[in-house]
Length: 70
Image (cartoon, rainbow, N blue to C red):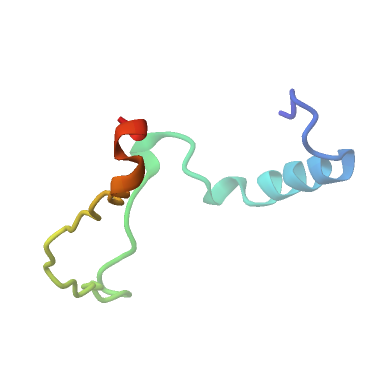
């Protein structure tokens, strides 16, 4: 579970405890994945605004160092 040793031993124990405590709530296989029931939760629509992507122009090279920069 912690091959790189990134977690401290106590953190590793905490993660194992949480996984075991919530095992029934975790979808271990894709057939168990789903959505919230529509009779309990309304569909949430997030409004967005259409926009035109923009691009910053390059910083111009000062004429005094143009030849050196090229």
